[in-house]
Image (spheres, rainbow, N blue to C red):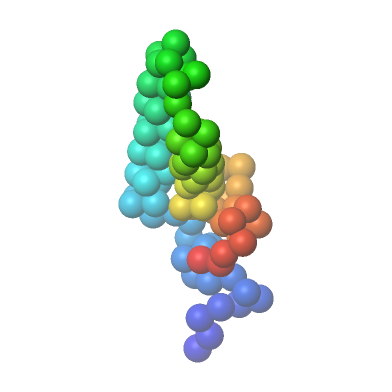
Length: 89
């Protein structure tokens, strides 16, 4: 018996499980908390070195992509990982 049919696995057909949905939700919560904290500290933005801004930008990008890559939403049907992140499930 084959594990894939036309490159689609049984897990992809089934969609995201509870753990993947929770990971996506918690990453969005963490993204929101970080954005609020950054906005509250805008008075000190000039004192922050560029390397810290680069780090924040890369981490925020990863957090924003996590919901799509951990199972996608209703719009993506859980197939966004291969298109967005370049990795199969």
